[in-house]
Length: 227
View 1 (spheres, rainbow, N blue to C red):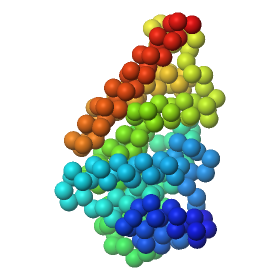
View 2 (tube, rainbow, N blue to C red):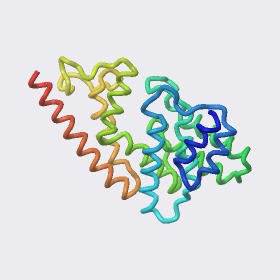
View 3 (cartoon, rainbow, N blue to C red):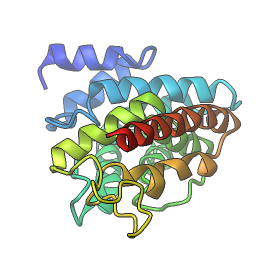
C-alpha cells in the first residue's frame, strides 16, 4: 500500500489512525483485493457497527477493537475454498506479528488475535472476551439486512452459482445446498445468524435485519411463482 492509501484507510478508524497507520506501514499485504464483499466498504460498515455495539458494552477496549476490525479479513480465502475455516487464524497471525513488531505486550497482542480468530463463522471458535463478542456480532450483522442480501448474490456471482434451483426454488423436494444455489444460503445460514449474536445491541439489530431478509425472500417467492 502507498503512504496515501495507508493514511486514507487508517483515517476511517479515528481516533486510532496513528496506531493503525503505523501497523499498515509494517505490512506488505493488501486489503481483500478483488473481493467486493470484504473490501474497504465492509471494513467501514463493520467498524461503524463495532462502535455502535461497544457504546452499550461498558469497558470495551476500543484500541483492541480498532486493530482487530482493520485486520479481521486481511488474509482472503474464497468461500468455496477447503481452507476457508483457516482464514481468520491466518489473519490473526498477521495482526499478532505486526503488533509484536510494534512493541505491544503479549497479552494485548493475543487479545487482538483472539478477537480476529473468533469472529469467523467457519472457524467455530467461542469468543472469550467482550472485544471478541463485539467484533463477531458486528461482522455477522454485515451479513444480514439489505447489505446481506446484496452480498449473497454478489458472492454467488463470483462463484458462478445460479440464483436458485428453477425446478425447486425453496427446497421442498431436495436438500438445501448453498454451494449450488444462492437462495439456499438464506435458510442454511443467514436466518440463523441473529439467534447466535452475543450482545443485546447486536441481537436487536439482528432481528430487524433478519425480518427484512425474510420479507425479501417472501417477495422473491411470489415473483418466482408468478413466472
